[in-house]
Image (cartoon, rainbow, N blue to C red):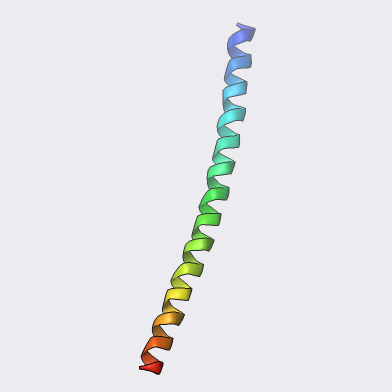
Length: 51
């Protein structure tokens, strides 16, 4: 019985670690995406003003 409990606890720990990593990647991706969109908007505005 203790083997099952240990396995369950290890799985919970692994899942919690993966969840944290996914959250971290999500924040990173959102930041990069927002930066790219901002850059596209700035370049689009400059194109309009220089044309």
